[in-house]
Image (cartoon, rainbow, N blue to C red; front, side):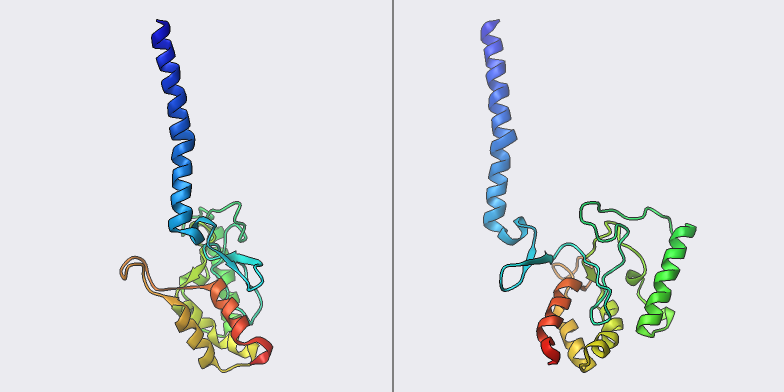
Length: 192
């Protein structure tokens, strides 16, 4: 009986060490070796090393000289991701969409039919860092006016930052708003 109990305790301890610690350390090591940037959170850093955000998490941009991200149900708080959980016919949801639509129409001077749904509805996680190229294109004239640059130069940056669907067929083309806005600051620094 003591021998069986000893074997059981030893098996339990070895299993806990292997699966509770060893396995995790192995996966962390592989992740940091094979995917070092992703393992660190896909952080975006300035030349001086200052972290300005992550490629995976949306940030709020409200100034006219920046492209605006998709709305967030969690006010862009990465600590509490989530959607509104409102159905498409919920009165609160419809009111929020109408307010956002009115804001886009007023700010960008476009017709309601031209506004992509991604600019007026929050994503399921509330922190989607991408918008479709069409949503970026809709904002190009406003950004160019605010920066006092030719709209074609802004459109060229949108084209540079347009990512194709993953593996050519998964998802849709997309533009990372944070990366595009950082590039705007770099390219058009000091009114260039």
